Image (cartoon, rainbow, N blue to C red; front, side, top):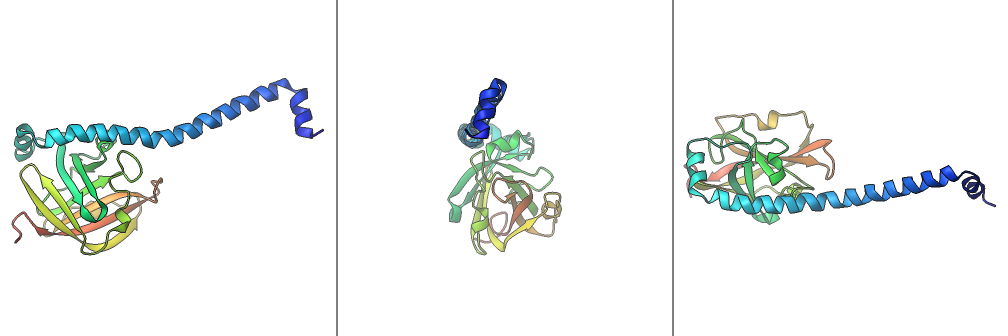
Length: 207
């Protein structure tokens, strides 16, 4: 008889322990598979609410008066090359980013001079930045705010930084640029993937 089987028959507690372990592993696997689905459903519902919010007169007034709070709709980001169309909220807190993407509050508002920075999820909460690594020089990124629209053009190939490197979102009033950040590689927060683009249309730029 197999030594393992002989041990299990001789020790009833080991069979119970094995059963508990099997159930635990099964529940863990279900949780790992189900969590992204849950976050995507949550993000879809949040985006539906934000779609209504960003079109409201109240939001327009709050935007103009710079009274936006963490989690408020801020701008719609469109990336035609990746078929991205999602509403970005103000703030990069964990609760704000459940919308999918959030604006670093320490950076200028969209389309303003300086370095506008936005963070987004790559594998959960709608994963708007899932394929950010596919962007190429010349690809367009459009920001639609409650008071206007502007277009940025990718000027640098995607690059990787440490998660503690915040230099890429530091403001530089002499520039008109956009920085997008997301986790890298997919499913891990070990690094950050960064895209940078330059304003080409809107906010005083020629059409």
